[in-house]
Every structure is written in structure tokens, then in C-alpha cells.
Length: 146
Image (cartoon, rainbow, N blue to C red; front, side, top):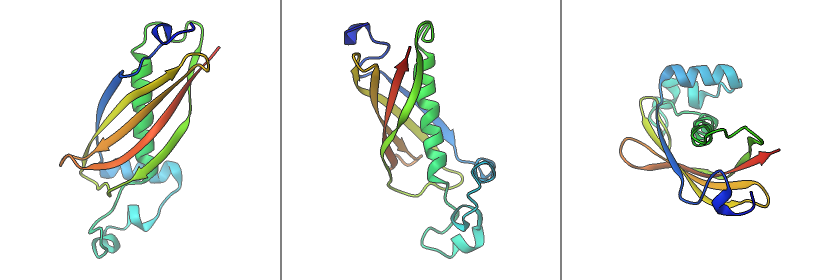
């Protein structure tokens, strides 16, 4: 494979996923990550703050982003026949607005460009809440390894 036409993904390929931010998800993520910050765990304290309630972990949003990259990869027939897609990382992540327990998030993952010679795809991710407000953005790099 040497041209964009032959690569697994192409610019414009996209996937959209929805996730509900539940108390169970936030509590479970705190247990898995070890991040028990009062920002995420103390409803009483956070209710008195400018946020007026507990907010989800930013890293939980990155985990949801990861589900998008998995979804777009798994749509490719025989994607692991000769190479394995892996994440090289997430760049320029910005948490623009708080995400609360009870929010319904829409994640839009769109391939911006591909580099067949380097076996990479670069994608933009935008997360919006149920009100249509952008709460988080980032970029993702996928690499295919022989």
C-alpha cells in the first residue's frame, strides 16, 4: 500500500458514538484510575463550588475517544491481516466545559489526513453534550504496524 487510495482509512472517514456519563461510570473510573479527587467524588463539596456538582474525569473522556478509534478500525474488513492498528497517542486535548454526571455525550471522530508512507492516520475528535455544547476536543494518531 503506497497511496491514500490503498490505505485503510481516508480523509473524511468518520464515526459518531454516544455515551451517557453515569455515576457508576465516574465511580468505576475513579476506582480503576485511583483518581478520587473531590472534583469527581464529593457531591456536597462540588455542589457549593462554581461547578455546582461533581464533574467527570478528563481521562474518562479520553477513554471514550479511544472507543471511537476502535470503532472506526473495526469497520475495516480484515484490518489485522497484515498489520496491527495501534494508538500513538492523543494530542491537543482541551477540556472546554465541564462534563457532569447525567450528561449525554456525542463523540465525533473524523479522519483529517493519512500518511500511507508512515502508516498513520490523523483524526480530529469533538465531544458535545446534550445541549450541543462542545465540551472537549482533541487529535488522535493511529499507526499500522507490520
